[in-house]
Length: 339
Image (cartoon, rainbow, N blue to C red; front, side, top):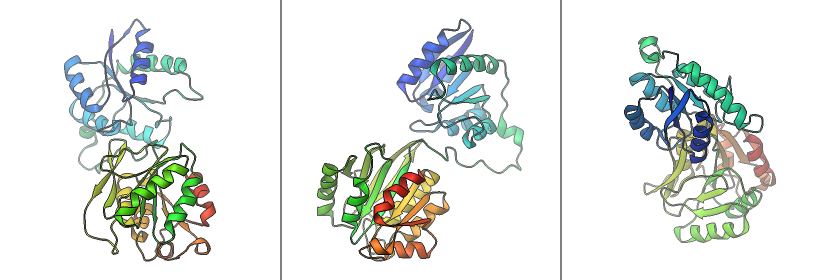
């Protein structure tokens, strides 16, 4: 009997996998875990023969966990995720780390039944393999691996604006569909006005718009506006993005500052993000948008003709941070096309 541990943050996926795998008389699902920390304890407790592992999970992503597992307790692992189509970048990384096999979760072209049959077959093969400690086998001359989970299914839109930005943001967000990508926004505005501004947009947009609080989790259909007189930063735990609201010195004489937000997005979202710089006076956002672009993000700058003040977009364009220039009426279309 092959003992299997299912590791996935979705309760539905854990239930489906457990039911489908248990149909085979040679397989016993001895436990499930919603994240790598619970999985670690259950591996010690239950001693599974094979693990099925998701990639996008809270607290620690699957590839980071796989790397630790292969270093300290090598065992057969099958990565099952919507992020791992065969031949894709993340699938190759999982195999390099030490996964026996990678599979995609069921989708439009891949039914639960088909996935179950494939997974059962791969589990039986995996149970007969002897995984090796990849780190030891590579030797000391191999450079350290890059951070795991360079791509996530959740995409982030980061927008910065100043003078004329309230109406520009309204124009952009009104065109967002209800399932638009998670969005973080810095608009230069005094603290007593940002909540009312967010509530106004929330009442007229298809998406939810709110003033940010530390710990707010990003999700599709939600836009978070930095509160006045506070900086807002994007943070990430595993595949979960949230915001951090903090004090700090003014940047470009501004708090919140667009550069503070954009730099945090560059660090934590990289190529999963689109950065947008709208109308405004000064240079705030130019350096941060450049960091985003250098980290693999796509970027958009509002054009001069539609800006109230062509300051921030101009500075961003001049330093090479803007990939595409668009009139205000086309900014939302550019964002969606890039995603």
